[in-house]
Length: 397
Figure 1 (cartoon, rainbow, N blue to C red):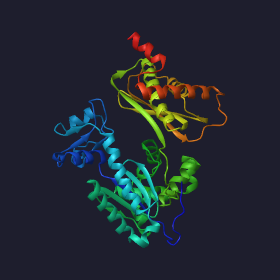
Figure 2: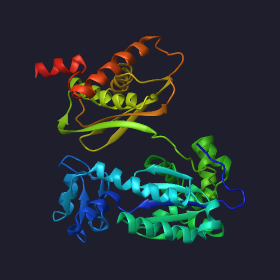
Figure 3: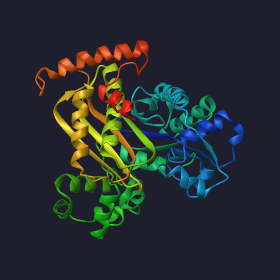
């Protein structure tokens, strides 16, 4: 939902606030003896690093790195298991603080959000004063630090917060946007991942200024109309996205890291069925439907790929979602490649039931049946009623 803002302030002011090493900071908050030590949040030798404090980062440890590798890099680091309930608890307090400054808050995740403080300046002061006040309250009331970026749009504000970490504040006035942006690498542009960055570098475009100084028509021919125009606009600091309030969770997902690499397609599909069951149960509990189904595959060498399919109409039943998941997996034709992790994600969520289903009335029947299963599981335990295929395989083992 996009709300109307105070029209008395002409210049838009966006704040991006990002907690510093959030998971690790919460661990230090709960156990002060960890302060000053390298702290890594990540469970299991085959798991991945979720967060590392700044002491641990000096050893080269980064998020998404295998825990086993992180332990080899910093054998004396303290490794702690994640506590997602605690993270949600602290996050809720942080978001309450944000909402006390402005109703225009757009959470991006547990530990970061955009805020439009355009109309708050009359009561709360300059953008810098507001940013400092936010940082102080987060520290005083939640016991953790955050970094704040301030600019006239989302893109520049988020870049600014990243450039003042940890525990800093950076304001980029409009007359400094170009001098701030242009020396930065193209990988800092919103939407540019490793592959796009490689493509840009092959074209001789290494810094943002290189894109800004390339004719728009040339970029469109090389990158496509949409991507070319998108990057060109950002290279000049232009981003027209508004702060979106009360944006619902954008996706529901589940993944599993295997205790050993698996190459048996039947076992992998069985795991995908379990993950689909978990994700779709949460979807139905929220009375929502998903239009886009995605799968993730991570190989033994940590290479990760994703595939997705967007349907004409949204669905919610485990059976129908699993058919899409299975189709996506089989289309990869992995030929017994060894897998380390698999995942399922449901996105493009809808609150309203589709009036006309692409699979006729089967979705309604499956949904009603699975809603009964959900109720039984809630009453007797999540494993009390499960797909027959899972029981069959368990007996065979």
